[in-house]
Structures are given as structure tokens and as C-alpha cells.
Amino acid sequence: MLKVLMQGSCSYDCAYCPVRTDSRGYSFTPEELAQTFLSLYRQNRVGGLFLSSGIPYDVDSAMADLIDTARLLRASGCDGYLHPKILPGTARTDINEAAWQANRISINIETTGESRLRALSGIKDYQQDIKKD
Ligand code: SF4
Image 1 (cartoon, rainbow, N blue to C red):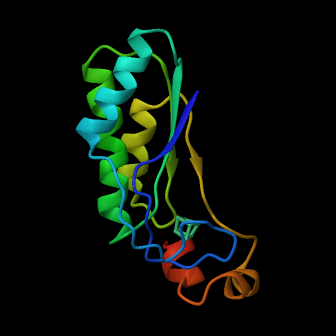
Image 2: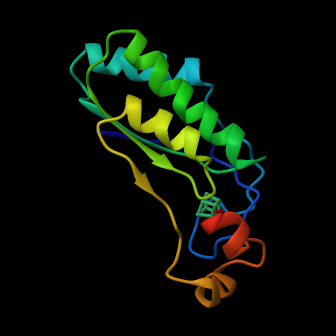
């Protein structure tokens, strides 16, 4: 299993996370990541991809990159295991699209409630960034 962060930087500050408010900015484009994975997959060096991401700008663009990577892999005939994380605050249409491409999805909710989130992050808002009805 190849586990990778699409964006290795993030504008949020979750206390437990090594990439919090990191601006080093290393990242993959969907094309780069799909090509890298396909190369390893075709050599039988990996059988699946667990894909998550920091959120350097906004959730919609970070999630779009995860979905585009999955689309590129499926369009290339890759039928390996794909597990994209659903980032907190992802729109329902993007959740549906990710699920359509994936073998499995899981959703980051970061913590069990509003007060605990406040202890972990000075930036994230429970209603706006996690629940987002
Ligand atoms: S949003 Fe995710 S990547 Fe960003 S700091 Fe929090 S846990 Fe880390």
C-alpha cells in the first residue's frame, strides 16, 4: 500500500499533525501522483493507494485533486485498491464522486466534538469546517 499526502502543507493548525501550518509547499499534481503510482503498480511494487492531503488553500481544491487523481488512475485502467480520505467540509457532490472511484472512503472528523476541537485547533470551526450541513 502506498500511503501519500497529495499536499504536504496546510493552512490549519491541528495540534497532533506534523504538517500543521507548514508552508514548505511540497506537493503532487494529480498527473504526477497518478503516473508515480501507475509506474509502481505496473511493476507489482504496490497494490493500492491510500490518499490524503493537507489543505493549503481550501477544502474544495484539495479534494478536487484527490478526485482527479482517482479519475486518472481509473481512466488508465488501474483496478487496484483506492482509498481516498474525505477531507472535513467536503461537499456532498465531491463525496459522491470520490466514492464512485474508490474501493473505500473514510471521513476525517478530527475529534469527537466542538470543545475538543477548540483544544486542538485555534483555526478550525466545528460548525463550519467539520459539520458543514
Ligand atoms: S487539516 Fe489535516 S493536514 Fe491540516 S493540520 Fe489539520 S490534520 Fe493536519
